[in-house]
Length: 184
Image (cartoon, rainbow, N blue to C red):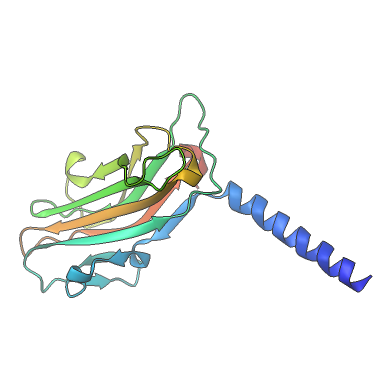
């Protein structure tokens, strides 16, 4: 009897967690990214969760990657909406740039092994206007993400600083099945 009760409770916890997980969107703070080994001496993590290039670095490109778990995601946006990539980023103007790309890598099954596809891209230079504040930018997926078990997904971010006074930063990333799914 006690064993059956424990099994029932464990099953209910797993089912409850699975239903919550499938309803959530993917989100991550900037400081949880994986900094390329060659760039570890140039990055700094902020108290607000952001990643940036150290102010002592005159110029350089910081490469950061974020593994994305999309196994439990369903991307069925309403007809007037799209599945989107969002980034809270800072581009302080001339000499600063942030590029964020959602990538899909084929790992077998229906997907050719090693095939790399760009699904969405945000380029701070495309939005114009400089700001010392973090601003939310978004981009729609350019295509369906595919049969999720045949692919692996990651976001790659490049923070580019070409003048010493520039201060590019990335605070957070999200993947939303629709605009309403990520709006507060």
